[in-house]
Length: 387
Ligand SMILES: [Zn+2]
Image (tube, rainbow, N blue to C red):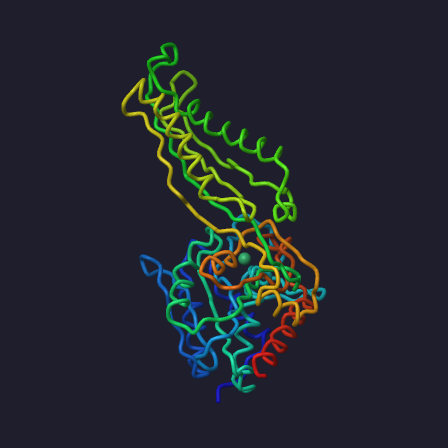
């Protein structure tokens, strides 16, 4: 029998792997794979295109339907330029808190889920625990969909998914969806004194950006649906957060690049917003091409996270309410992989230890009380699966 590792020992190990999204996560995946194999649990990798990263999933217990998926991401955000008091890659305990990159978002939850494995086996669970460990969550949840699709195809269907993003162990049953475009406006450069013969990529791009302002004004003015009313703000927003372009004051800009994104309330069709943005870009482009045929606007999708729609009395919500005793209803404004599980017809909620306010911060920490609450959740979940 392998030695049983406690949640804290596993957390120390996981934080020690600097799995920043831009880098490989394979050292962590190797470790988890070996850990599960030591307990006789086979696990399966779902690779990224160039095989530098992988997601990992596993079924613990009998291969039957009605189990529970515990879902977490392996990647963390960078620490570059952040003032850390202690080494971000070493869990450091101070004042009842566990400091370290990813303790809160979300290696704390992953450590709890892994520590639950031997207990689940010893308890002889009758319905399985399924683990889903993704990559590239911090790059717009781009790693999980391939893993979720494969789990749906190869594993007995679980009746509930718990995505352990930090929620202070509260039951979160809704979040907004998000999508992002990279927009490249290609103009035609001439001296600005004869700008009517050129195409200014910045000024044309500004038309699309101002269209975002119009979308926001129109959505704000509409009365919100009952689901939308749960969110702050209770409408779908369009946003441009970064822009670059132009060569000099006296040249019509040849290039302008910006990111354009939407955050959609559940019930709003995010695809309709994406189509509307493309249609507006096509209209602007037609005017540009009338001046010069090489002028163009290209838009590529950088990420797409579907919203999490509250499922009244859904199995995942009922499970987490039973275990936590939390009867309130909460929604959050950040996107998670829960919406992606729901898109594959899983019942999904978010519930995990820690406060999202500590995520991505210098001196990120997880309250030990939250870690303990998460461990209690795992033990109660195992008891439920064993009956
Ligand atoms: Zn996260």
